[in-house]
Image (cartoon, rainbow, N blue to C red):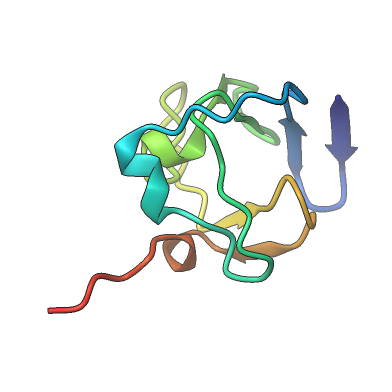
Length: 93
């Protein structure tokens, strides 16, 4: 599935397969609005920018193609934007 959001400046892709193979590091990442958890295979595109396609959570929101730092991330389920840092579940001290 392909989505284009020109006003917000991000194109994103979502693989619709039914398998959910979570990496251990991805278990603590979720949308702060709807609690959806991204998978390692989910992809976002740096646009406007270099159009590199990657998983934004593997690089903490920094595009590996051009080093642009994305401060907000769109949820591939609810399609709402949240601060990238709010996606990371906090651990109790």
